[in-house]
Length: 553
Image (cartoon, rainbow, N blue to C red; front, top):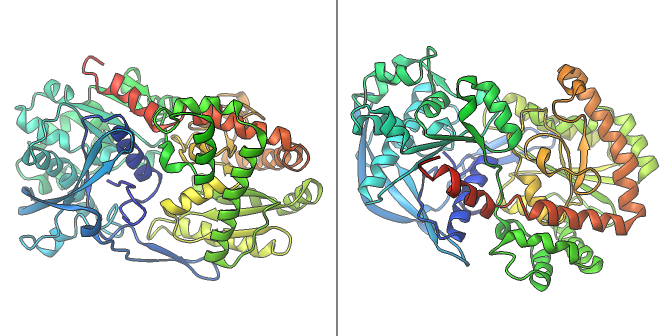
C-alpha cells in the first residue's frame, strides 16, 4: 500500500513504506528479477504542521508525478460495486549503482473514464477519513488490479509476494484464473505479516466484499479461506500462501500465538535497511577508506572493529553538527555539539510510548543533574484523524515546556526520509521504548547502527537479536519471556521500564559518554560491526530469495 522511494514522493506513511522501498533497493543491488506494485498515492499522506501547543494540522501534499515517473500506455479494468473502474499505471525505476534496475508499478484510477468516487481510490495513502467500502475498494484495486496490470505489461510472474493483508485480494484473482484451485494459488503466493497488533489486521463483512467485487469468485469461496465470520485480510493471505513469515524472530513467535492454526508454517526473516541509503556522508567516507566494497557487501561492515577512534568520532561529530544546523533551520532551537543527544522518531501511536522518558520528570531532572546534560530531538506524525496520536504530540510539547531551561527538547514537524537520515546519522543515542511485544521489527535502530549510533530500547522486535548490553547499546526493562515480563500489567510495565530507563541513563549511558570517550567509541564500532553488518537489505533479500521465493519452501 505504500513505498518510500524518494523524499520528494509523498507515497508513504511510515516505517512499512520505507521498508518496502528498501526491499526494492535491495532487489536492485542483487539485480533480481522483480517488480513492485502499489497505488500511486499522488496526494500523499499529508504534510504535517504543528502549532505552538503541538496540535497537528495536516494539509494535502501532492507531488509532481511526471517528474519522477514514466506514464505507461496500459490500462486494465476492475468491477467494483457494479461500476467498471479503469486503472492506469506509472513506472518508477529503482536503480542501483552496483546492480540492476527494479521497476515499481504505481496504479492510478484518477482517469476521465471513472466517476469521482473511483478517481479518488489511488490518491491518498490508506484513504484517511474514508469508510470501509472505500478502503476495501482500494485493496481490491491493489490486489486484483495489480495482478491484471502485471499481465497487461507482459510480466511473467512466478511468485506474488503480499506485504500485509491489504494485498491479499490478489488471491481472489488467482482463484478465478485457476478454477478455484487453492493449491495452485498457494504455489504462486508468499505472505509477510508486519504487525503484532491485532487491531491492525483488517476485517470486513462478507456482504460488503460481495457487493463490491462483482463476479470475481463466489463469496462462498472467500468464506472457505476466511471462515471466522468476517473477511479477515491476513487470514485470507495465510490460508492461500505457500510461505509465510514475520519480520523478526520475536515477531515470528508473536504471530504464531496470534494465528495458532498456522503456527508451524510461520517463518522469520528479520528486516534490514538499505545501507547506502541510510549512511551519512561523513561515515560513508570513513567506510570508503577502511572497508572496500562496503556498499556492495554490507556484511563487510564487520571490519569496522579495525577503524581507529579518531576518524570514527570525527565522522560522527560532523554528522551531529549537520543535524544541529538542520534542527536550527527548522525550529530555531540551538543544540549543543558537546551534549548527549537522544533521538526519538516514531509514528505517534500509544504503544510506541513517546512520552515514557517523562514519566517521572523529577527523576529525570535528578539524572541530568548527577550524570550530565541531555538534549532530545523528537519527530513523528499521527495518522490523520487519530486523536490519540495527536494528543501524544501535544503531550511531548507540554513536557518540553515544563523542562524549558533545564533540558532542551525539540519536535521536528513533517518527518520524512531526509529527516530520518539526518536523525539516525546525527544523534548520539537512538531511543526506542515500545510496549512489548508490539514492535514487529523497528528498522530505524538499524539505520542508526550503520552510523555508529547505539540503540537504547526495550528488548523487542529486532533488538532481541541485536542487543548486547553495553556493547551495541542498552536495554530498557526485562528480557523477553522472563517471569517479570510475563506478569506485568500495563501500568507496572510503564513504571518498570521508566525506572530502568532512568537508572541506565544515569549509571551507564551518561558516564560512558562524558567520562570514557574510548569506551563510547568502542560501542559505536560494535554497533556498526555487529548490527550494521547484519541488519541490512542485502542480507534480508538474500534470505527471501533462498527461502520465500524458492517453491519447494
